[in-house]
Image (cartoon, rainbow over all chains, first blue to last red; front, side, top):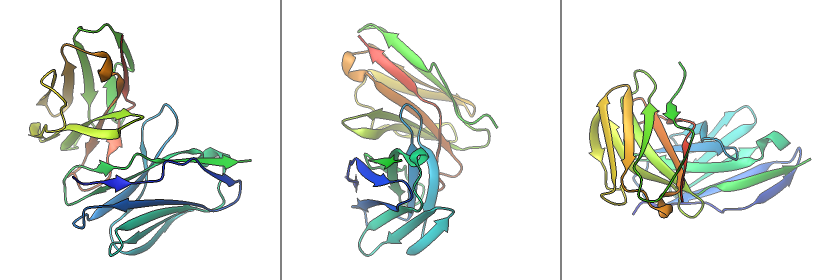
Length: 110
Length: 113
């Protein structure tokens, strides 16, 4: 059974701070890693993907991958109240279906 | 492109009734996925198709659930008979080649009373 684990939160950070979201996965064969953002009552929206060890930056978002530790994280710099949402980590191997974590709820306090 | 289109957005039905959810994937996407989301279990894969062919339906909870994809632009998920424990948000998603991130539809919120 492939598993993706996330702390459910809520994670509360003040506006302007760095939010750090973490995810671990059980399948060592996982090759692709994604972060989705889901606002309350809305559908998941892809915000970052990462395929190799290290960091990948896109605007205020940085995804970090460590395959040896089976760990992937998402950093959000200069957090804004509009970043308040649930963040879902998802992984897959090749073209097998994505396995999702249950998500971490982030609350950015103005 | 209009994205992945699901209908209806909301469905309230009585226990024992048949429910049909519909999905139109993004044109050109060759993978289609049906997920169910609940607070307790998160996003669970029910079934997925590649080029209209069902590949894995092991996530379908019971024989009461069935899914079809008669062509590249349309899929249905049917529950017959429905039960209160089927209440959830059902998402359809599509993907190109299955190796890239998925695009989700807006979901169908199903309530079975």
